[in-house]
Length: 296
Image (cartoon, helix red, strand yellow):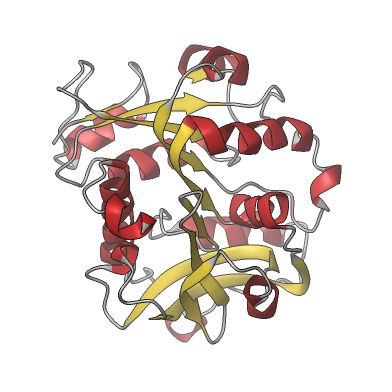
């Protein structure tokens, strides 16, 4: 089914090349998904998420949301033309909300410049979004805001492609997953399993022996927390590593990525099917096809 993206989104041409159906018109009752894009690589993230939202049988209308802080790596024209302010959407209701990761490294939540604005959006999401998917840093921020679960700062950045085990195969969000699957991680902090288990509601869906918890579902508020980066491209971790290496010469290369440590060796993309399946299952929740089973 078509995915509707904001008219003029640079990702349109690439999505067409990949064979995804695009629509600027409303296709029946399309699922409305609002994306708060906090990533420094805005255009890449727009393409990555539109690709995943468009690879399911469900029609989706994707809208973009920004914070008031103007990004350094994206033009003001792009942001003003394609992104909405929170004030412009706060009276609307969405089937789904996606909150992306961001680049704040080890900074405490309260010291992040747009933390008060993010708190408003997190509070609003409870009543105005059918379900919210939090990715990477936003997953940690959401767990902290909603459940008081603290993040743990890591001495070394966790970056690489890691194997994960499904912990809740009966949960519809894990439907179709192999017992073991891979996914990228890229972060400077973690949420410990013990901290999650102190709160009654959140359920761990999948975790890794190396990278820790990957996905958590809180069914009462229909919140999905994904500690990794399922949306990443084949070369995303490589680009991040080369970017961060200029500021930290002791930074370790991403794990399980490069054959024999060769940074020029193409990274095998082993997580794409799992990422597509996760988004398809989540969109199924929004469409209420599997929502009754999750809400019992």
